[in-house]
Image: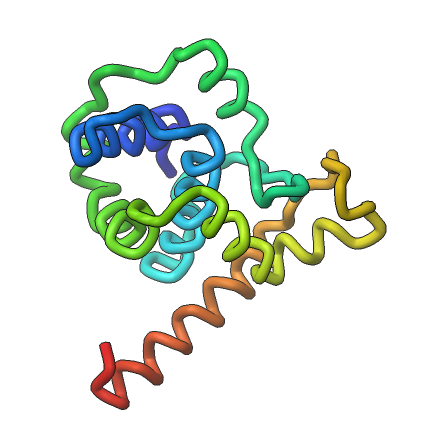
Length: 156
């Protein structure tokens, strides 16, 4: 399992390299969520050990909120870490990095894991209820099955 700060720093650095701008905080949270889900798809194991919370605009990681505010991401991520995570992050960037943050927020609102974490929470409120890893696995299984079907149809 990878260190969350290494993964977040790699995403921040790569985003800057590809788009010549700092990633906004909402997009970073969403790309980290999609990276965790993608790891469950590809490896059937989480990429990092951290708890997402189902806030009103989608999944967030509290430690990333602090790191973003303090601009405390690493400028250099070890090459061995990059080599272990690059296939997952490549897939996430291919599918999601070019989208605006609000569309990513809307996508995460369709995720079972986010919906489950919002039960009993008013629409405009954030929540301290964690998203369960097993619920994220449900989302990963759904995407894995969709990809399998699309592949069989020759669409992907």
